[in-house]
Length: 447
View 1 (tube, rainbow, N blue to C red):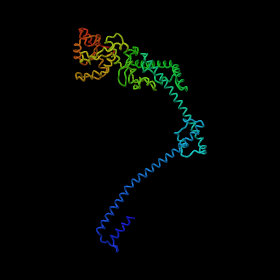
View 2: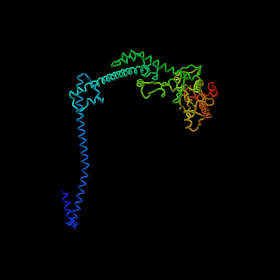
View 3: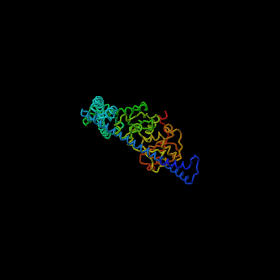
View 4: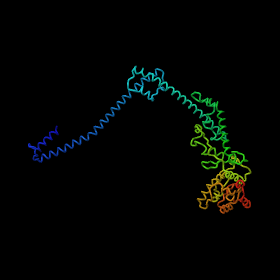
C-alpha cells in the first residue's frame, strides 16, 4: 500500500489534468530518485531472503523425513520383537531367526501392529522359514566343530613334526607332508568326522603311529623321485646315490647347480617360504615341488668327476665327508690379487658351482680391467685342459703368481693341506709343482 501511494503521488506530480507532462520541480526529481533506490533495496532484500528460506525448508523436510523413518523403524522393531517373543514361547532359539532374510523382513519387520488376525495369517510361513534356518544353522555349527577338531589335530601334528625333525638329522621340513597327505589316513578321517567338541590327546595318540608312517612314506617317495631325476643324467654304470657329491641337480628356474641337501631348502622347490614350518603344515597342496629340477648335464657331471680326481681323492666322497672337509679350496683365478693371506676359501661343491656358473670371477676380473672373458660363459670352454689347472699340495706363492699372470685365462684351484696361503711360501718343491700343471686329458671330457 505504501508503494502504491508513492507511485500515485509521483504520477500526479509528473502528469497534469490534461494528460500532459507537467513541469517537474527539483524536489520532485529528488523524491523520484529516493523511490528508485528504495525499490532496489527492497528487491535485493527479497532476493537474499529466498535461498535462506529454501535451505530452512529443506532442513525441515529432512528432519521430518528422519523422524518419520525413526517412527516407522520403532514400530517395525516392536512388531518384530513381539513376533520373536511368541516364537520363543513355542521353543525356537534366537539363532533360528533369519533376520536378514527378505521373506522374514516382509513378514515381521513392518510398521503395522501385530494383531491376532495378522499372527494367524503369517504364523505358518514363519515356521517354514525357521525350520529351514535351523537346518542351515545346525549344518554350519557341525562344520565349525569339525574345523575346530582339525585345527587341534594340526597343532598336535605341528608339535610332533617339530620334535621329529629336531631329533632326526636325516629328516628335513621339506619331507614333512602337508595336511592334504595326512588327511588321507583312514583312521584319522574317521576321528575327524565324529561329531565331537574337541580333538583330545587320546585321539592323537591313537593315530600318531599312522601319521609317523605317512611321514616316512612321503620322505621315501620324495627320495625316489629325486633318484629318478638323477638317474636320467648319470651314465648307466654309475650307481644312483643322493648322498654322493656326483648326484647333482640343475634348477631350470634359477639355473643353479644343487645337491640333495640344498634341494630340500631350495627357494624354487619349497613353497610358502614366507611362513614358518608349523604354519606351512596347515596349508593344503604340495609343500615340496621338484618339477623344476633336472639332472646335471654331462659336462657338469664330468666337471665334478674332474674336480674330485684332481684334488687327490681316491673315491667319490659323500655329502657328509665333503662337509667335514670344510672350506679348503681356493680359486687362484679369482684370488691372484689377494695372496697376502686374505683369500676366499671354498668348499668342494662351491668350487664346482663357481666354475660351472663362471660368473663371480668374470665380474671380478672385469672390474679390475685386467681380464677379457673369452667365449660363451658356459661350462664347455671352461672344462678343457688349457683353461684350468689344480694344485693338491702347498706350492710357492711366487710361482702361483707367475703362472696365473702368464696364463690369465686359466682357472686354478688349490687344495690347502697345511694352512692358509701365508704358509705356502714354506714349500720349495718346484719339481712337484711343475708336474702338477702338466695337461691331463679326462676321457669323460673329450669322449
